[in-house]
Amino acid sequence: MSAAFESLSALRSEVLDRLRDGEADWIGRLRDEAMTSFEEQGFPTRHLEDWKSTNLAPLEAISFERVGTPEQNPVVVTGDGVPELRFVDGRLDSANTQAENLPAGVRLASFAEVRRQAPELLEGRLAGLASPKRNAMVALQTAFLDDGAVLTIDAGVEVDTPIKLCFSTSGDATSPASAAFPRLLVVAGERSRGTISIECEATAPGLTAMVAEFYLAAGARFESVQIQDEYAGRVHFTSTHARLERGASFDSLVYSLSPGLIRSELEIELAEPGAETRMRGFYLGRGDGHVDHFTTVDHAAESCTSDEEYRGVLGDRANGVFRGRVIVRPDAQKTDAHQSNPNLLISEHAGVDSKPQLEIYADDVRASHGSTTGQLDPDALFFLRARGIDARAARLLLTRAFAHKIVDCIENERLRASTSTRVDLALATLDSDVPSGVGGSSG
Image (cartoon, rainbow, N blue to C red; front, side, top):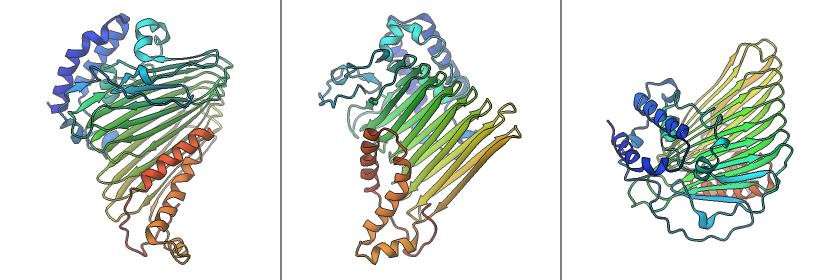
């Protein structure tokens, strides 16, 4: 057994009584069944098709010393009026949480509170989309179900202000390895509208494993913006699942900025006619980082639309992976599905493995997919240099323009501005070592 497997199994035994305290029996059974499933599957290996390009050996080598934080001593931060739940090591930081002033018909609460006081909000939905039986990392996350957030929006309610969730860690690079397992459940009623911002920031080594499930009723519109920006010594795993009913719309925007090991999964089911999704992602590889995005959109009904674009910038010795799968079921006539994955290599030592996939079982379909990989355009670099811009600044300008095609897709203006700042700060840390004159297209 790996160090991670043994240490997490031991820690789970230690925290099990606390996890079960005051909760419904069925949640405890779900947790136990998930742990059994994880023990049977083990950590994913490269022998599995879905993991062939990502090696979890760095995770398996970690010996975890804690899950969650026994005692928190939070530093109070000044809020900006946005409804926000903050979590430290996967558990609610009540001193820095402000969930007041929400519109009528909107409920935002910690997952730990809901599973103890209102488990009926979870029943029939929790683990309904994210199955522990077919995903070992989801099984591990479910085996440690503890805290996170639950958001419900009643039918017809529109929430103009983005709701913010911030997940951070205690400690620093010298701290013992810790694990955090935040959970998110969002239920949007018919014709409702909302936006959620999810930020993962870590300063200590270990693992952040988050699972999110979105249920969108008929005509609901929802935007999810995820930012992953953690310490290089921390492994990040996210698995996001969404089910859309008739005419619902789901925008997913993911920004992976961590210089460490990232696996980000997104699975969307267009379950009823007229549903549509827009999937946007930007990933930045730097240092010795490895970032893996694995997406699936399932066209299960007719007249549905999916539009996906993930862009990668890989520098230093980093590696990127993109696996995009689009499934069009036999009854999903009049499907409109598009997928694109342009990548920009700004170092001769960086690499990317891209594989967009279409699986079409219907005949009345409009679909396209494509992937490109190149370097910065030397003519564009020459143009900027000829106007007095130094080489590093010129490369940064072109790289920023490439990345901001995804940043500018955020509908909420406030979130778009803050995300732009985060992306720009991350891009500024890149060192390009591509020889001058190496060609290609910046997409």
